[in-house]
Length: 372
Length: 246
Image (tube, rainbow over all chains, first blue to last red; front, side, top):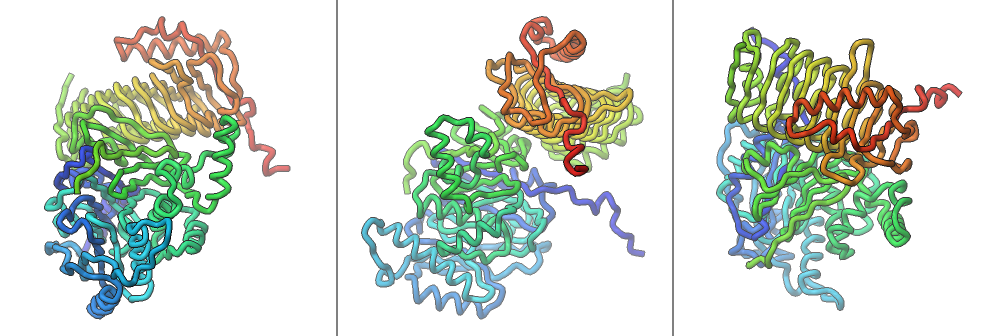
C-alpha cells in the first residue's frame, strides 16, 4: 500500500538562497565553489528553480554579445534564428553544452549565439558612444524577440558572460549545465522557493539584460508600479516573475541615466522620510530629489539581492532588512550570501565577516583593470 | 557525566538532528564539531543537557528549546531561540537577525554583535522571564513589539550608540537597558520612553551583567557596570488600545 508522505518530510522549510563570489584581482576560478556554496543552503529552495551567472567565461568571443536562449518548441528555434539573422551578424550558433540528468524534468531546447548588431541597422547619435548605441540596439532586439516569438526566451544577453538556469535543485542544475567546467571571476547563484509566481525554466534566477544579472531572495510588492514605470522606457516584463524588474531598473538607472551604482541603490532602496529629516541640509535636498524623481523605481517589500554587470558585484537588502545577507572577505575574494555557513563551506577562514546595513549596498570592484 | 561527540562535517541537518536525538536520552553533554549551517539544532529539546557547538550552527537553533544549555564557539545565524521556553544560549561570536524571536523564558548571551530585530516580541509570564544580552552592538528594530522580559546591549568596544534606528517600535512590555549616556528620541518607537535607571533597575542590571560575564572570563562586570546605562520602557501598556475602539 502507498503510504502518504510523512508530515515531517512533506514540510518544506524555505526562503530563497542567494550567493556570490568575486575575485577582485580579476583571476578566473572554477564554478565548483559557487556550486558548493549554494548547495550548502539546499533548504532555502524546494527544487523549483536554481541558476548561476558567470562573468569572464567566453574570453575567445569577448567582443560578441552572447544570447543564451531557451525554446519550448522546435519551430521557435527557426523563427528566432530568422529574427537574429535579420538583425545581427552571427559568429557562432551552438547548443549550450548540457549533460543528461535523470531527475530534471523536460528541459527546453537550449542554444547560445555569439553575435554583433548589423552595422547598417545602427543609428548613430551624437553624445552616445558606439558601445552605447550597440547596447541599446541589442537590448531592444532582445525585448522584441521575447515579446514576439512564442516560447522563445533570451535569458542572458551580455558579453563574455552567461546565465544558466532551470527548474531543479542547485546541484541538478549545476550538473546539467556542467557549471564546474566554466571559469569566471564573478559568480552568483540562486536556489529558488517560488511563493507567488510560477515555476518554469525562464522564471528561475538569475534574471538579466545585457551584462546585468540579478539573483533575489524575497518579493517585490511594488512590482506593478515598477513594471509600468519601466514600460515608459521600453522595458517589457515577459517572464512572470517580480525579480525581472530589478534587472531592468539597474539597467535604466546605471546604463541609461548614468547614475553610479551607489545612487542607483539610493533610488531603489531610498532612506525613510524620518531618516531624511535628520540629515544635513545638502543631504536632505539630495535625498528628497532622489525620492521624488525616482519614486516609481523604489522597490518595496522584502529583498536581498546580488547584482553584477561584470565590472562589480553588489549586495543589497531592503530598507528594513526583511531578508538575510552576509558578506565575507578572504584576500582578493569577496563573498556575499544568505547565510554565513554557505561562505565558510568554501572559505573556512575569512579575513572579515559582516552583515551589511539594510538598504546600503556592499560593492566589490576589480582592483586593476580587467584584461580582455 | 556522559559526553558524546558528533562530527557534523557534510551531514544534512536532518541526519545530524537524528544523531543528536539518538543519543539524547543517555548524554549529559553533546559536542558537535564542524557545524556548517545545519538547522534546528537543539529544537524542542526538553531536558537538562549541554550542547557545545564548534562551527556555524544553522538557522532556528534552539527553537522551542526547554531546558538545555548551548555553547557556540563561532557565530550563530538567524532566529536563534525562536519561542524558546527555558535554558541558556551562549554565543562566543556574533549572531544574526531576530535573536530570541518570541522568546518566553531562559537566557541568550551573545559576546559580539547581533543583527536586526533582536528580542522581537519576547514575552514574560509568571515565573518565565526571558533575558537577552548582546555584548557589542545591535542593528535596527531592537526590541520590536517587545511584550516582556529584559534585553540589554552592552556596547563593548565602541563609543558610538550601540543600537540602530526604530528602537522599541511597538514595544508594550518588558525592559531595555542600553549602555549609552543619551539617545536621540527620534530613534525610538513612539510607544517608548528613555529614562534613568532607578534602584530596582540597577539591581536587575547588575545581577544579569554579572551572570553574563561569568560565561566570558575575559570580561569584568565591574568595568562594564561603571558605564552609564539608560532604560527604555513602554509608557503606555496598550498603545493602540484606543486606535480601533474610538
